[in-house]
Image (tube, rainbow, N blue to C red; front, side, top):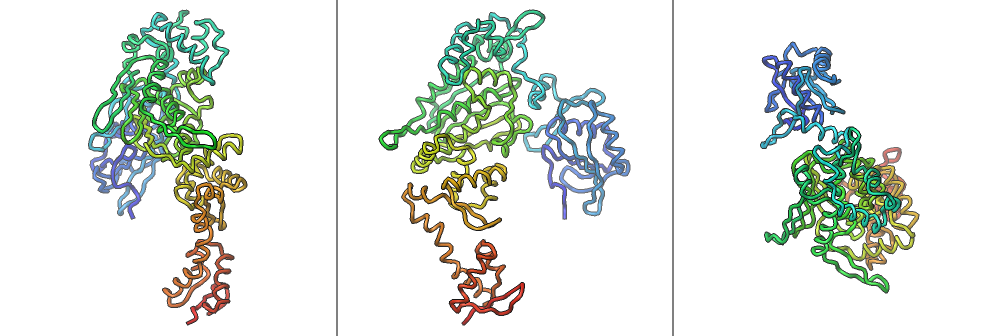
Length: 551
């Protein structure tokens, strides 16, 4: 059986070695890989995946490893092994992702990318791309750097007044900043930095309180776009180089006009439920601007259309962040100085867990979860689907939070949402759907059982969870609750008899365990009941007892 991949990708490369692949070309391929995402290079495989074997010169893995280390700066520590496929030897070289920028010994800096047809290629990494790479690896804070060509006159006093007003009005703003003179305020928020004895604006300073015309001139990458489409009709299409503080206020105003609210009764009150949760929108916008790559051309884009809301930004996820660990990875961003200023002003989540708010904004209303699946290595795209709220579920969540006197954790909300959609789930299935750690899921489940939020049945791997009785009662779905909890056990005998009859009238306890997804003692109870009713009889005893249908 073939064990190597069948085709090339960004992290898989095939190289023919029939004519002895040149060492300098091999080094360049390795450098391109390590400067991108790492991967595996298979020497002795054609571009179409045909295995032709490695040249005798490259059959020494230790020698190839040493060659690569001696020909790269800093040295790359690869792992090389000879593997056999289809009776031919192949050299497999595992290339780690670099923690910096690597070059060949001759000074070439390279990276990999996918061509338009999807096949990979190695291309030069230019000097202007190096800060982006270092920022992606968390080794450079581009937002804290002085902005070339900028002077203190490029900062807008009116925008600084806006900054002070935001600190004053936002609950999360650090009010102690308001007592500082302008220069000390700028230093505290890292809006300016000292260069050769003089203060100059940083990238963060220009982004937050710079003059619009100077931002456009000095930072052509700092663009933003807001679009609203109804069908194919364009209702709003605005490009801007405004400073972020003004941009945030403008975008909030725009969204209010395109974010209708539906009122629902909650006791004696009427509660508005917006089409898109406000906290989720704000956090999505903050993340887009704080985590975008300001060395890349492109715009932060907000799009509202018939499908929902999309917020996208140039620059992929930072090193260590991926689709599966968004909710669990330690908070860290591409532009720490900008993110810190936004937190202290009161625009961003203090804990750095804005992603929790984005998910919470959909879950509490029983809507589909936020979707990051269209993100790539070059951009992050958040999609929030336009969908009707599940009002009974939303009411239950609100009641439970009022009862506990605090918001439900994101783990609890996600488990409730999964069970609301799936009805019945094993722990393994919940872990699969949420991408959360199993230990955290199990801990949350035990708490939810004690709180009456969920109920469980079965043991071990066969343990399943359903929503608690009070949720079904609140939703006026008691019949569905009875069906979930009791109807399965009522049908057990008939299912066992049906299986036995399809197996020439013979069945074992193991058959019953696998059929009903129950533990051994529960299976034995079902069999004993059928024996007592005279429908099954013991055919042979012992460890592997068999039972026969009584005609």
